[in-house]
Length: 265
Image 1 (cartoon, one colour):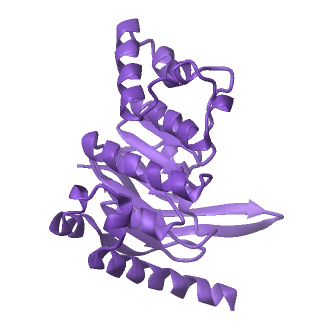
Image 2: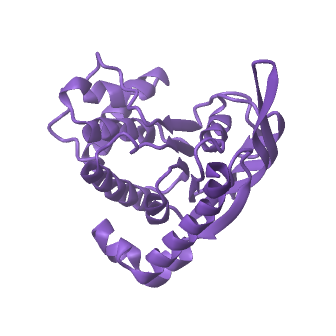
């Protein structure tokens, strides 16, 4: 079942009395337990796609649907993880993760069990009473991801969630997210500039053109992952050394380079 559907979606913004086309005729679906990453040149509308699914931006034309219903605004069926960690600085790790559950009126025992589970899954044990300013960037993003998963959303929207992290922490978070996504699969739309990250994490990678963004190509990664046994490899470096991974990465980079060169010229 497809949970997310873009059907002939275009988006225009008006600035200084002029119309600017950001997206043009986007058609894309994301399945119920599918992880889809979108890559493309800066300014091509990747984040705008995510914001429309979240209900923060309406399409100018076409339809964005979640669960077969056109998106009319934000909803509890969708959770967003941003590049900036967006935690409540006055709340502890435990309180940040529990916040959405309390707002929904979840029973105290459910909150306790759910928060405890995701603290364990995200390696946050021992930090329950820490405040965000006492945590590293990687730890803060673990809290943000735990908070999103704790809400048990049908759709998880991730907008360059590791973009603000240093290289080593980013790798560790990618490995954590792969582990979490495989053990607790759900519909994920993931925006990134990093081609390697997209290939490592996603079941499919959608490549966008320069602005106005269109879907240029969709790459099926999961059959290659299954065939090559990437999920049996513990470290991201081991996956990235595989010939099949290198071929996919090289192909996607070549498609993106074609989009960047005319703009640079």
